[in-house]
Each structure stands twice: as structure tokens, then as C-alpha cells.
Length: 206
Image 1 (cartoon, rainbow, N blue to C red):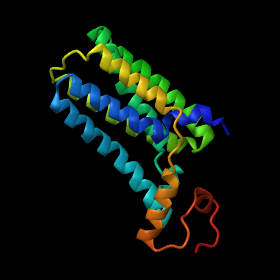
Image 2: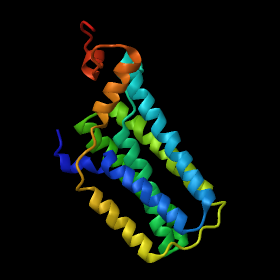
Image 3: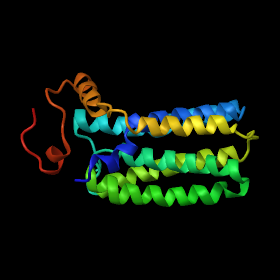
Image 4: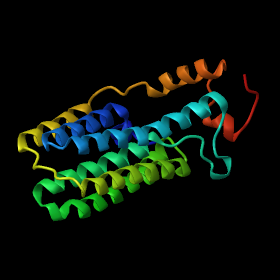
């Protein structure tokens, strides 16, 4: 198990502020269409993660032949946010750097997912699923930005955003899994949420 300090950066307590900062930057770039595309990207990436967790916790549904109980939200978060943040920041320095920065961030995100998140809380198959989802969302979003006219983001707004993300790394972790447990139980009628160990080493179920 890795120290919390290495995995907390992909927790929702950090990633939700990061998503909000990106939305603020897009507003500062005066592109409502880019903001709408970002919100749609967030929905398209977070919804499958949440549904996979509810389906498993409440009904034990997963992809057994791939050894996937859920899609790793941490791996998805890291991939989506790092790639988009890296590309947007590089774009402010020199537009030609936006894609090289995105690809460099993508490599870091895959390393993080495969060798940090997987080692800490998920089998590698679930981390790969999260990385693939985050990568698809990030690259499709950045591809969409190519068709839009983004104005330069004011330096003050950039700095404030980075400070907000840095501050969020010190926030307490949100009890997302506990909330999902309660929701899954209320929807499925089970007395206890399923855990990955129940699925990989089946025993009596409530």
C-alpha cells in the first residue's frame, strides 16, 4: 500500500476543484462553447465510473474475464485532469506546445495510474480502464478546442487557479465510497454493499 500522499492527488477532493479551475479558465478565455464541452466531458467521464461502482456494490455486476469490478475513478481523474491542465497551461506560453504538453501529461498520467493507483487500491485492469476513459475524454475535449477561438487566459486567473488546486491537496478526503455504498444499498435493497474481495473470492452474500 502506498502512502496516502502519493494517491490523494487523484481524489475528488482535489480533482473537483481542478475541474472547477478548468471551467473558470475557459470562462476567462471567453468561450462558452468550450465551457459547455468541458461540462459534457466531465459528465461523460464521471457517469460511467459512478454507474460501474453502483452496479458492482449493489448487484455484483462486473466484467469477470477482464477482472474489472469497477472503473478506477482515481486513474480516470488523473488522466483527464493532467492532460487538459497541461495542454491549457502550455497553450498560454506557446500555442504550438499544446499537443506535446498533452502527450507528456498523458505519459505521466498512465505511469501514475499503472504504478501508483494500481499498486494502492485497484488491480491493474481497473486502472487501465480508468486511464482509457480519462484519455478518451481529455483527447476528445482538446480536439474539440481546435475548432474554437480561445482568448488568452489572464495570468492572474491562471495563478489563482493553480493556487486553488494546490490548496485543495491539503483538504480532507471526501467519503465518496461511503456515499456510493449507501446509494447502492438503497437502490438494490441489499443489507451490505459488495466488496471486490466478495467477487474475486465468492462467499455467502446477504
